[in-house]
Length: 489
Image: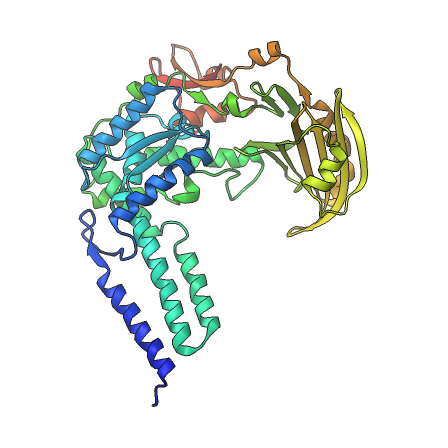
């Protein structure tokens, strides 16, 4: 066989690439395994964490700093776990994120985050310790470094194989596989993080079974969220399941790996007492949902979405979706005075859309415009309706509505009512809008789930929400003296 010069260079490159792979394995002190982390050193992990920390906080509503004592409490739990880990220093950073979603995540370098939505769902200090311990396991086991290094290795391999064979398609195919490989933690990494989390819980004196009890609450919360949204299958909002697909069986495996369950601290009452008064649901600075109504006391406006639309409040827009595929996106834009709302829609906002029925209107005394179009989407043709309302000299608020053509006529009146429900709030009206909070109540003799659930300041599914929030089974009764969570102003 004759090897041409170009092929020889490519072959040598491929061999060099393989040598890098073999030389990049190190023994992880936490797991005892040889891990491939050649392309991300601990120093690089720390750098990534420092750089991404402010970006991640901005994407999730910033740090929840309304309750400094609660933040210190979460940090104390994290410090206790880190002290018994294989990486007692440098200190990790523990942050409560100002988001009502139930989630937790970590950045390389020791940045651990839990949302206030997760804190509201948990029912003990041990459960929070289990969440933090799991995230700490990902960091100490260097799972991100493994994912990144293997992704780089796969890409280098694709280049080497592609060059050696002269096949661009092989290189592209391998790159595709590399992208899929580094998308999220693997099942083995999740189990490894669970095993490490259980280890740290036991060493710190917590009951490791709390990881399983929280997972049961998480599963119940996810199921209820799907039911409320009228959907089955995927959650309507991001949750801990999306990034950490886990089961009670896997937690049991992790407990068994750590030597079995041991009695330890749970801390149910002490945790709930610290949680009392914590913000629940939307932050008023970002606008508040009340059933079908969206109220922004800080920016002083409100509107109401049509029936059967499920509303989400994100950092950039309010999104409402219906079962028939219709969707509404509400946002704001700075538009200088003097620009007509019709021109804003057709020239500035969506200049490439073939608009029709462009019309200037007035919404509760505010200059506005509306326009319609038919557009093609991945889901097929959709009717598009844009509405822009000048709120003040430079501020414009906008509705963008997508409807399946067969549903447009039936929704026209409801969407028109939504448009004209948009109005400004007076200072007195805005001052009356209060956020919801977690309130702790001691069960009295004779009080039942139904009776206490009726006091929940939630629009629907009161009994179901009460049970999920308090980790109660479908038929579990209350006992006098137990502390439970209610939702109220």
